[in-house]
Length: 454
Image (cartoon, rainbow, N blue to C red; front, side, top):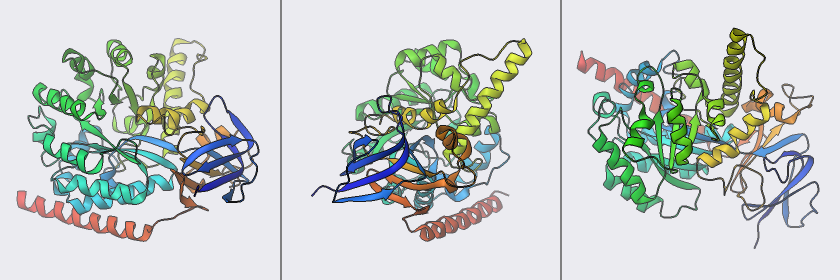
């Protein structure tokens, strides 16, 4: 029997050019798939009707790069630069992480995403210290019901071993095991990628081995490049090009210090770009290159990166990118005494970047990112009656520049309601207890390790 849900009378921002915006519109969902988006859909007698009056209905946000495992150590490095982060997080907390900590982090972290209207997540999981760690990560993702691409990364038991000309490749046999056990289909809520470290961090033999492995298993590749005082100098994309490894299956994260040649290489190879604007400005990666990507014909996406240092919601990232990019352009134009260009970022562009562009970068645009009939129903409703949004004049501006997590009223993933009337339909008390227990365990382990090393 077909399961139907009808979202009635919301202000629909579809992000589909053929449908556009509907000041009052309905969305029909059948068996988890969007089947109609129209001004008025005849009531289905067997449909569950959700009243969207006073709500702005948008596609779910897509976070294309988050180290979800770090949720138990949220806020541990508020003043960190990127160099500090490597020491304070990867060389301090990561080595003492157990599988139970990864499970707690991914459980609480993906519920945090859903609560904030993020329906799709690329989980950049470079915490695979044992084979039990990735199993724990995937188990948590599957329990929350989020749409996620699990990006299998390296272990993090030693900063020297894994991030300075590393000679240790991601264990191919365990990646194959995970592919066979958890990701036999590429059509489910959970899919797989490989989270590689790349040139500059690894010797060429390791880089080539990891790229070969991903392509053997037919899974996408995601890699940090062009960021900060150190990695910004590696010319990582040029090195990948010289190794013959560039391809359309690769997402490049940050990209703050690309040469023009490297931008052309990414664009010409069909690669995609993920930008983490709050982290990049705050931790010294460089200016978020949103307009640089657009100017080179790319469709940039947004990501949170690390909750050790920044908030975990997409509203923050939208504003950081929007404000940062416009501040950069305004300052350059002031110095040159020229008018600002007509290509300045707009609020609608930012919503596109946070939704349909994110789906494109995650390789899921055929499935999510816009309210298009035929796509899966990943939908968010924003309460536009709240005092920080009302009165409504520009619904796109309301979402991108006014709303916050408290306004996320309803979240639907693959046709299943995960948040309703502002409350997650999950055992949040258990998730909080587990992540707090993990925090206590990790802090104690770090203290014990310091005493042993003293």
